[in-house]
Image 1 (tube, one colour):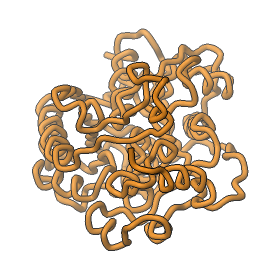
Image 2: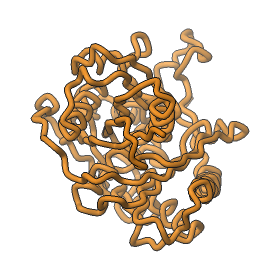
Image 3: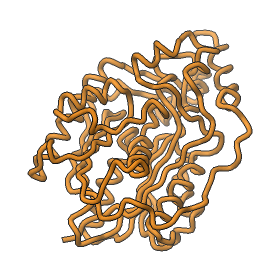
Length: 360
């Protein structure tokens, strides 16, 4: 039987930091208000294209696996803030890194994009259809914010992460997964005025906005992710006690605490970095997974549980068994283009556009 071992991992974080204090310079909020409700202290703001982050994360993951880009036969890219929709952004990454033997697919399931990609890629390897797959998850979401709305804008940041999957006969990688969607509540998280169903004739089309029903999202996120975690443990015959680390979607510290309590996992086993980056949507899990390895939180043979929830309302969980290696085989010198602006300077045109706009 074939398995899909994670042999490489990498992350890309833009250098510009937007702190809670920065937000108070143009928004009616405070560090205490944001921290007490979300656990977020700061987030990163991208100064270049989303694909630039994806390319760097991919190159670092390939180096960690000691592979050439031409070894990859499929790229799965999870994001909802792509450079373009035609061509797809996975193809931009493929061309930039030189993965000439790879098929390239974009996955838009919002915050669950990476976990969905990991599930799809694992099963394609298990069938023998592919042997080496690059799974990327990330977001350029700060540029899709209405910066006049503190209920949404304070939550999100930009980042990207990637992993390499390789066919293996060892029982390793994603052992079980459960994914789904509660489409009856699809409008609880919605970016409005974006897509073919919105009129290009309306002036409001120029102003991207959000519908975000926080309480509904919280309730459904905790319930769906916890049940999915229970389901994947049942699939493998393992218990909560067997789990060495939980690497969940980093949306909100309150959600992480509620998830741990509901599943019955000690909070010390839950990896948390939401305070540093905010919610980077499809980027949260691969970035957190990479940081967990860098910090020595994952050992050979560990069971790692992951769960995510996003717009759609999509949800999922997966249980991974880590392989023998927790250190990269080599390192990449790939970096983003230089950044000579602060986060506030990068966002200044967007902030001005929304804060000066007269209500409809």
